[in-house]
Length: 180
Image 1 (tube, helix red, strand yellow):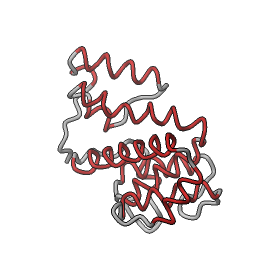
Image 2: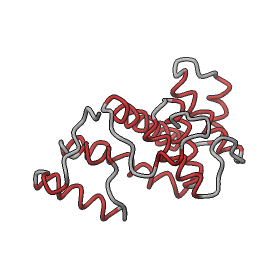
Image 3: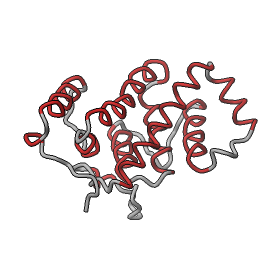
Image 4: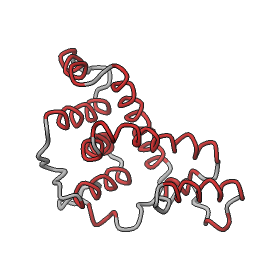
């Protein structure tokens, strides 16, 4: 049972309905269950919509595949089925294997960083920071870390808000029956 209500589109306040319509039109997509839940409060929706702005800023210089692996690693390590399954679906549909990905050195660095951010943010080794500094400028490290922070925040909303999985995502569960 969901903890955060998901108000049907037609029952939303006009301001919320407009914000949702503008967002969906600009992203050529329908709203996810999390986005629909966030529309109960337009400022909250707007704050979390910044994740997409960061995605759009990062993707041209790192690639959508690398960014999907980064977001998947964060969400999977965080145990957030809604977000992890979304990125599993994205990777699988692109012909990738999220469980045994064939990745570049930079993509592996992002996967490892995403998992470390969740697993042990206070204990990231200095040599790992050195590798990040060698791979990305200070500005790009900031943008990637801000993106990671918003990904963790969306994981939290999905998990604590008990937001139901979007249609079709359960087909992308691991064979072992894990959540992601």
